Image (tube, rainbow, N blue to C red; front, side, top):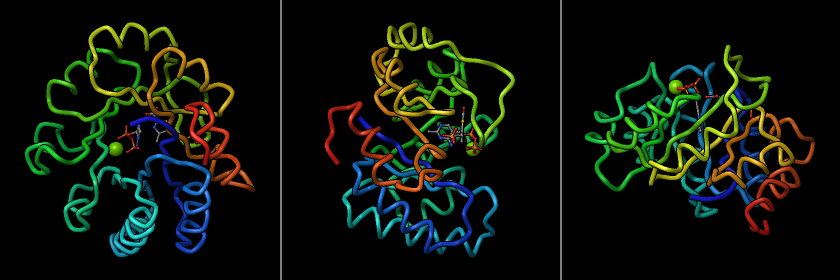
Length: 205
Ligand SMILES: Cc1ncc(COP(=O)(O)OP(=O)(O)O)c(N)n1
Ligand SMILES: Cc1nc(C(=O)O)sc1CCOP(=O)(O)O
Ligand SMILES: [Mg+2]
């Protein structure tokens, strides 16, 4: 668990979504999360299945945001859950030990500690930089990462307004993965955008 963690945008055009995701995988994205907060059930199934096939071709894990039912239906590699989603311990019990269960911890080390105990595979801290996708009413200081590393054994993901330039100091402070939407999908050349993130981890895409 190291490198660029690609999170999909709310795009309902599946061909466009697949083309940009494939480009980012060619650029070296290490893991993909299917997140579309606007899709209905049918579109979510269609896009989830298509992304899973794509990720399998590139031998990269696909994580499903929020929707445990879709994860189970597709037999995807795991789920990502936040504070208002299914409880982590329930997700771990449903998926078993081999699957990925990711946990949103915002800027809260206590949530990360609890997530680790509940069986999270990784913890995600957010709110570091302004995001076009999500507004938050807090700012997480980079120093949180050093503090969190003293008690966390699971990998740390950082998210929220990430660019290769502003993510670099967070990687230096212990982030194992950098999750991004806009910096990749909003770039006219997602392959090159992914490559710039991958370079932070010494990965050549
Ligand atoms: C890697 C990663 N980190 C955080 C989130 C946010 O999850 P959540 O707080 O449940 O909010 P939504 O994404 O569901 O709006 C994430 N999806 N991925
Ligand atoms: C989905 C999500 N969760 C966040 C958190 O802080 O928990 S920030 C975020 C949006 C990430 O998109 P972008 O890379 O475009 O800022
Ligand atoms: Mg969620």
